[in-house]
Amino acid sequence: MEGANNVKIVALLIICLSVGALLVKAEDPYLFFEWNVTYGTIAPLGVPQQGILINGQLPGPRINCTSNNNIVVNVYNKLDEPLLLTWNGIQQRKNSWQDGTPGTMCPIMPGTNFTYHFQVKDQIGSFFYFPTTSLHRASGGFGALDVHSRNLIPIPFDKPADEYNVFLGDWYNKGHKALKKTLDGGRTIGRPDGIHINGKSNKLGDKAEPLFSMEAGKTYRYRICNVGMRTSVNIGIQGHAMKLVEMEGSHTVQNMYDSLDIHVGQCLSVLVTADQEPKDYYMVVSSRFLKQAISSVGILRYANGKGVGSASSDHLPTPPPNNTQGIAWSMNQFRSFRWNLTASAARPNPQGSYHYGQINITRTIKIVNSRSQVNGKLRFALNGISHMDSDTPLKLVEYFGVAEKTFKYDVMGDEPPTPSSNNNKVVTIAPNVKNATFRNFVEIIFENEEKTIQTYHLDGYSFFAVGIEPGKWNPEKRKNYNLVDAVSRHSIQVYPNSWAAIMTTLDNAGIWNLRSDMWERNYLGQQLYFSVLSPSRSLRDEYNLPDNHPLCGIVKSMPMPPPYKP
Image (tube, rainbow, N blue to C red; front, side, top):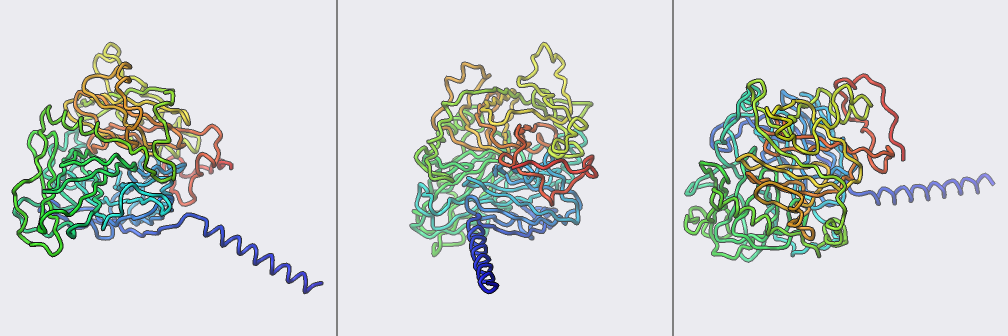
């Protein structure tokens, strides 16, 4: 009997091990990265300066992953300042703990490390990461985060011969510390010094190394992001049309463009076919809506082509005008962007199976941006509230039940102050946190009464960009919304003296940053956080505080609160 029992025990162990192996195999794959964040000498505009590098690189290492992959990034902060990285456009489902903003996480202190662990759940597309602390974004620290469809999900175009990441943006020759000192002193950082492409800048005729190589007859995917500080840009490729196929995680209707406006914080993908004479061609990037235009070029080289010196200045892409006609041109281009209703994204069902236009709006929030002086210093605000980061992240004080010691909810109203109630345009500097109801379908109106373009980004969600028009918004404008095939995305531009409308379902519990992606404005208060709490406090809706999450400020020595239950 004893021998028989031993056999049964061994058999049971084998079964348990087999089931365990199946469970491990069933879990979505893990990708592991180890990053060292350091200073290093860079010269994007030809002027040597201190930059922020990741593993000695700018742009930083590419995260090349597939939908639902688990991403584990061990970040060593070898700077002399606290650091956070955010994963721009990754929704962090149930997991605002990993979002990498000052409102959700304690920073990684100098000489220490932190391991981010998040899942690119039900997402595909072109995204990027960058530092959110201080003005670190002005010194680099950015890189690609590309999310591919799973093999069983068809994509609406043939697999390209190769993929290239293109990072565009304005650049300042002063480092982030000097720029921060300027803002802290109450002054603007002013006009940028130039434009870079992947950390380099060239002029027509420069004998520069090619940025990208193509073989005649083949098609390539370019994933393009504007990682600048404040300037919208226009991109075109000499002699080559661009077919738009994806924008911020959504497959688009595949229109052809000679040039594309890309606003700060935005990403898109285009297909380019090498169908011209084999030689060098210019990629041309120009500023938009600046009084004095700035530009840069890069070289695209055909393999086995004519090579060095074969690029000519003939038939270059012509950037659109920077006046009111140029704004109308850009608005019309926005309206040409459409959601591909028949294509599948991260899931097998077509994108168009989600009928957002048939959902009743439960709340409308109208937001007006402003620029003002507070005690002689420059500040930016939303509905009269200029956000200020607290010593303890908002998410932590809320989780520990001591929010009232740090901030008040809803200091900003759902409507901007009326002129009669705010004759002096008083701006309040305070943490800007708005309560939001879990799973509500909300409409957010951005109205820009200033003479400069704005760009906004919402963490934790994608939204439908249903309308952009000149003038002021009123409820009658809803008649003009695109309620069928507006692109689902995470950023939106608002042109001068114009409005933009977005719609989204707040179905992701956590605290999420709605921010200006123009970093001077962001740093000086043009942002807020939505607090979206699940009433059930359940792990079905939100993860518990991770074990490795650093504690700081007033919660550092507090006992841990009860965890969420299944």
